[in-house]
Amino acid sequence: MAIVSLADQTIELLEYQGPDRPSAPAKPFDPGFAHLALVVDDIDALLVRIAAYGWKTQGIPQPIASGARAGTRVIYAVGPDGATIEFMQPPATAQDH
Image 1: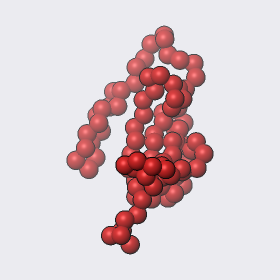
Image 2 (image 1 turned 30 degrees about the vertical axis):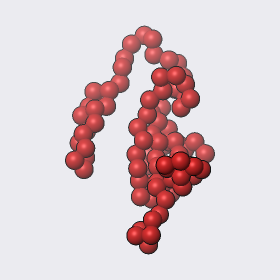
Image 3 (image 1 turned 60 degrees about the vertical axis):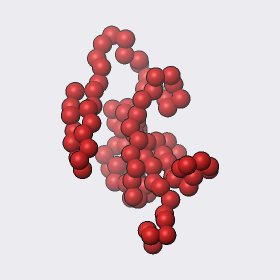
Image 4 (image 1 turned 60 degrees about the horizontal axis):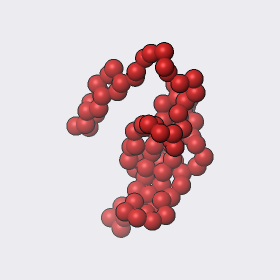
């Protein structure tokens, strides 16, 4: 277990140990799958940076087509230990230019 604080946010990271541990990493569509989703400013630059640490993307960033997050680019990345993080880059707004 680890408690991590950054930018006025605190999260607890917990890894369960035991004999019932699956032999293969879970997929995002598996029941009980859990992951972090982080909002980022520049998803392309972030993906280049994390690749140097062994993170592998699941395809390329895809835009959300409709709904409240329409235009947000999203992608899953899997770390060397099998952990999955979803990265989300909201669309640019008029004030971002």
